[in-house]
Structures are given as C-alpha cells and as structure tokens.
Amino acid sequence: MADEGLPAPRYPGKIAQAGTALERIAALPRPLVFTNGVFDILHRGHVAYLEQARQLGASLVVAVNSDASARRLGKGEDRPLNVQDDRMAVLAGLEAVDWVVCFSQDTPRELLQVLRPDVLVKGGDYAGKASVVGWDIVEAYGGEVRVLDFVDDVSTTAIVSRMREDRGFAD
Image 1 (tube, rainbow, N blue to C red):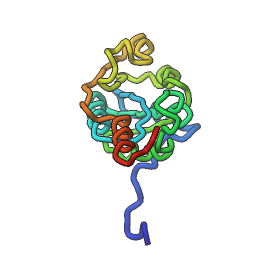
Image 2: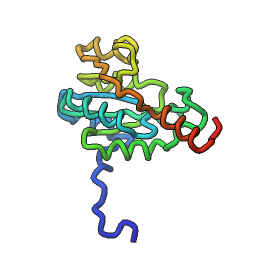
Image 3: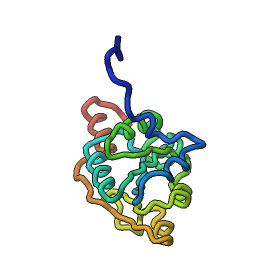
Image 4: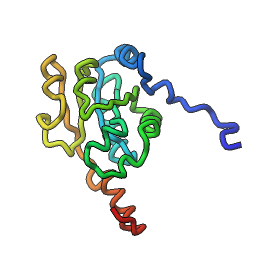
C-alpha cells in the first residue's frame, strides 16, 4: 500500500538517458544555463543556488558527477553517500531544474564543448570565474560565466561532519 493513491513522480522525463540526452538537451529553450556538481546530500544551499541559476536563463541543465567521478574528487572514501541515480532523481524533482545528466569524467569539459550553454554557473565557493572548469570554453564562443553567492555555513561536508560528531562516527 506504500504508493497507493499517490501520483506518479513528474521528474523521470527530466533525467537524461544515454543516446537521447544531447538531442533532448539541445531542444531546450535558450538561454541555456549549465551547472555541475556532486549534490550528494541536497540542502538549502543547493536549492537556493539552483533557483538563482535558473533565473539566469530559460532552461537549467544540471550535470551530476558519477559515483566514480565523485570519489576521485577526494571528499572521502565513503562519498558519495547517495548513489548517482538517487542524486539525479532528487535534483530532477526540483522545479528549477529542467534536465539532469550524469558525467563520468573528472570535469564537465566534454559536456560544455557539446552543449555550449549560454551561461555556466558555479557557487560562491569558487574564487572567481577563472577557477571554474570550462570558463575558457564557454567564453570562447561568447557565453557567460557566473559565480553566484555562497550560502554560509551550509555544505554537505559540514552536514556529514556534524553527523559524525553527533553520532560518534569515525572517519
């Protein structure tokens, strides 16, 4: 009886499937805004950031690091805590997000070259546009790079750290 009477989720159509992803993303209204990240535990900072990013264009594509790619970022051997399919599903459930795609490389440079977003966005934890991977690609064809404000004291790393302290978990 768990799902009885509940409407089907509206987000599965927002998750890119191999083979049709680029075609479907290319059909999105422009200007196209692009961002990427692990998005391991979705929190208030992520939601505020994605809403701000969406306001910069007509469509927002979020590229999610695959599980292997996320592990290579050095956030800890136990990260990501949530598998890529779950992280993508949560992001797809947000109204601000039009499309979610996964990438397995260390950076989204390949996606940026193919998708050619009008606006590349990262959060305020980046020290200006020159620290954003792919800024050179986007600006070379006339796109814009934006670094949005950071929501203080909210991060997945901080949440995990508090959980470990509160529960006595060891690293």
